[in-house]
Image 1 (cartoon, rainbow, N blue to C red):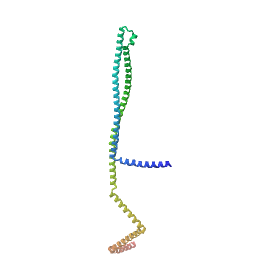
Image 2 (cartoon, rainbow, N blue to C red; image 1 turned 180 degrees about the horizontal axis):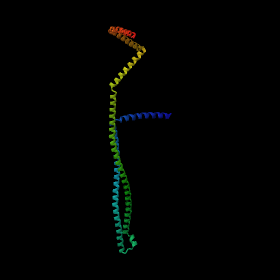
Image 3 (cartoon, rainbow, N blue to C red; image 1 turned 90 degrees about the vertical axis):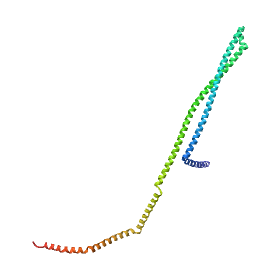
Image 4 (tube, rainbow, N blue to C red; image 1 turned 90 degrees about the horizontal axis):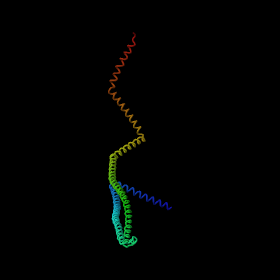
Amino acid sequence: MANGFTRFFKAIWYTLTGRAHETADRMMENPEAIRGAYEEIIADKKGNINRYKAAIGQLIALVEQKRSSVKSLTDEVTNLEELKEGAIAKAQQTAADLQKEGMAAEEVKQHPEYTRCVTAYQGFNSNLEEKNARITELEGEIENAQADIDTHKIQITGLHRDLEKIKSEQSEAVADLITAKEQEEIADMLSGISMDGTSAELSRMREIREKAKGRSKVAQELAGTDSRSEEQEFLAAARSSSASDEFDALIFGAQQTDTTTETEPAKKTEDSDSELPL
């Protein structure tokens, strides 16, 4: 039961979100809306690039600090090397002076002035080893950080190229939408011209005319007026022919009678001549 309610509410949610997306998509067909959306994307990309640059700047600053530390440690190492040499020189001078006084080597080693030189030398040497180790460590960190910086610089360059592509894509997208909208408007206009009010009214009148003719024909067939129309047509033709004969008789009737009378005696004479004996 619970699963059924869950699916039901999910279906409602999907329907609402789907309609919202459809509405948003229709709104985004506006060129200015597309331009604004691209501007937001470009602004976000610029923000990311600037933050990236800031992080790389901090890394570069850290590397510079480490390089400064290496330089400082190197100066200290140089100084410690000199101090070591000074401690050795001082110990040698002390030993020589004490031996001139007749002191044995073992006694010289126990002499406070000599032991002071030895202690100083050991301190300088220990400090020198620590600083050299730190320099080696810092140089390794600087090398790795520099490799990362170089990689980040390449990535920054790629991000700038992508940003330029998005700017170009923005112009193309806006131009495409404007062109598509204009073409759609032209197509709608042409469609309106081909199906304007005059054409529609003319088609309607022709349809009414054909319907009226069809109804008239059906009514005539049902009432039998077609056969009566034919009979009237035939009677009219007969009357016209009869009237024409009567008219011809009135005009040419006497002449035709005389011609017939003259022709018949001649014919009889010809017949008598043919009966005479030879």
